[in-house]
Every structure is written in structure tokens, then in C-alpha cells.
Image (cartoon, rainbow, N blue to C red; front, side):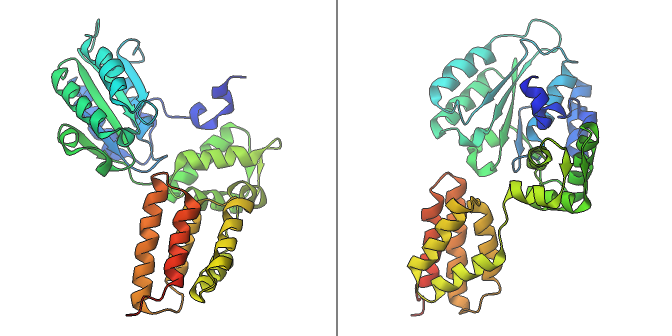
Length: 320
């Protein structure tokens, strides 16, 4: 059994633009490019699992009618993010002309917002110089991670999180093809945990199905982990009382013993902070600290240290 057979995400990835769901406007614009036989440089922006890579690959497949050998290259810019890669691998591909058919090639750069500033400047010059023979599709989670000169050279496509309805439809289609059974409670838990990320939803379903291929609420919760609001509330209250050490111990338990993600903890803290009894000025400063921590965690900073700064803000008296 191949890796593709094991991964439901790849096994059921849409191969053509017509198979893509909940992206009617994007698909319509991409089809119009194919119809006129010309594709601009493009920037696909949106959270993970919302169809950016799928749309790019489907465009390539439809444009070259399944024969993309030598005309298409895909790189993960977060792995190949340095200026040397741009000057060597990207430049070598971009400057060579396609042999037959469509008069240009396509280069997809996934996670391009993780490229260094120097690499992006080098990429900008390559995009200008070889515009006649190569088109670029940049995929990014955050548009602000792309320098303005590159943004101005691209048609921007936005990919918001998928709706719960479309997550449900996609899940059911995959589960039926895999011969799996499920309960409605299980589907609701997957939809809730995925937060509009179809890839995450499918991976949760595959992990929870196990050998029996039966999805239950309990099997889903074992996979995604359970974050009880009460635990977050108690951690916040301990910090508010000035017991920073106890609050940090509770945080360490959530992160390391329970294996919960930093994003889930921060998200639940944000929810609880809206109802906790505290001075409004202090609430604003704590929410600001929480936002800063969330940003730093998303950029790869240490989760325990960043969430501890929020607990420190809770334990500090901001009153002048």
C-alpha cells in the first residue's frame, strides 16, 4: 500500500477545478484565464486547509490537460526559503522555455510568506525578467508576509475558512468512499475542531476511524484532545489572585500532560476573558498581551513562554 493510499487527504484531493467546492468565485476566475490561454502571476492567501494548493494544482492540471511534465514545478518555500535556492533552483526553472503547447510554465511556491526578505527581493527580479516564459503562483497564510513589490505583480485570490456545511459534505463524501460509518455527534465534533480546515477535518476522521472505521464522539475526542473551559477559568483566576506559580503549573499540565495545543488554549482564554470579573482597563491590556502571544506562537515562538506572559499580565496590577 502506497503513502497516497494511506492518506485520505491526498487520495481524495480534487484534481480539476470542477471538483473544488465552496470556491465558486475563485474557480470562475481561474477558468477564465484558462479560456483565454493566459495566466497572470497569482497570490493565493488564506488559512491552512482552505484549498490554496488544491486550486493551484487543479489549475495546472486543467491548463496542461494532465500533461505537465517539464512545464510545472512545486516548491515548499518554508523549506527552500533562502536566497540561494531562489537564485539557483527557481531561476534555472524560470528561464528555460517550455517545449510545446502552452507558451509558459508554472512555478508554485507554497508557504511563500516564510521566505526571507532577501529571497523575496531576488524572486521579484526573477518574476520581472522571465515573465514571458514563467508564471508564478505564490501560496501564503498571511498576505503581510509577502513584500509589496511582489504583491503588486500578482492577482490576489483569498481563501477564507470553509463553511461548516461544506466541511460536512466533504467529510461525508470521503467517509462513504472509505466505507466508514459515523454518528452525527462525531461529525459535529470534527467540524468544531477543524474550524474551516478541510485537511484537518479529514485527518481527524482518518485518525479516529482506526481499524473498525467507525467514528464516534469518544474516538474523535481522543484524537483532538478535550479542553475544558473550567480548567482555563481556574488558571485565569489563580493568576488574577497573584498566584502566578500555580497558574504556570496548570499551564504546563495543559500543554505537556494533556497535550493540548497552544492555539486552543489561547483561543479558550480569549473566550473566558470576556466573562471574567475584572477591571475593564486591565481586561484590555490582558487581551492585548494575549493577541501578541498568539502572533508569536504562530511565528514559532515557545508556547509556554508566550502564554506565561499573558498569565503575568493577569497577575499584574495595571491600575495607576
